[in-house]
Length: 436
Image (cartoon, rainbow, N blue to C red; front, side):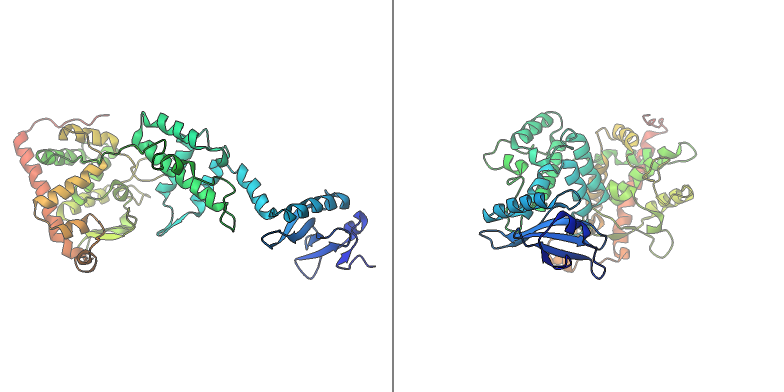
């Protein structure tokens, strides 16, 4: 009998002498002594013992790799094949069992990397900011769990960690555990079998601890309502104007002041404003505009420039950094744009008499829009809020920036007017110095 026949009795010498296929990617040979034992040879010459059989109960035909023929003898391959066939006879699926073993050793960091790379939402891949937040969560909040198997993360461990972190940072703890819940759900579903069973984490431990009557409750998150007090808006505007003067301030101070002023004049989120680039700003034309391509709600929008906005952006353009396309550039760092104008916000907060953060400018913009009589539909459009009613989605949705220009002009003009009133009232008082 030629050893090139598909079926023959395996011996070490015959297996070693088998050539690699030249007319296909791989070739298969089957042992006549042990049922289901086979040998696979690739075109590159790699030889592996395999076993084939049906899983009792499901009737599924399975093929499972036993190991390299360079490492296993024929006798050892026969022993392993018999063990696997007995397991299949008992109803165990070797492919499922192999997946279970792999799943048991997958770490939280590995799950994170897979999630960041492959997770898709209805709007596409995760944004860089979302990826960075998840990475900070795993490598910071859960750093001691990062290189441990996700299968070892228990409900009790989650409860203990949640309670500890909630003592000092309740809101951040909520976000961290939302991220952890998403990662553990990803690990569960990624390793789920075809019949819907879960080799690891049959129940997400984070979800389990928050179930009704569970051992933990989400920390209450008080909605923020901070904004610039109405009687301080003028003083804040004067302050920003003074600190945006390149003749009197360093570049970082000027950029920070202009960024905050831009948010006050437009109501944009800080993440949208700081990443604005010059190729999305149109200073010339009948209706000068700026375009927000990446927004929180994934709805790109083009908005008009009021006179005050045009002045601000012209100043920024005249003082733009060579080789940097961001409107609000950073002097150093990889991002290229100013990320956190914290020092300037502290100075603005002193003038406003209350602690302010970036989103306070957005609320203040909404307040001013109401003061000057901008209707709710146009306020929604200026703030790029998506409508939920037929009127808003089908009628009050004209994308032409010219339609919104009068409203934007009213808001800016009121702010500038308040600034002039504050100047007149100050009668030459000293400028509040910016905190270092």
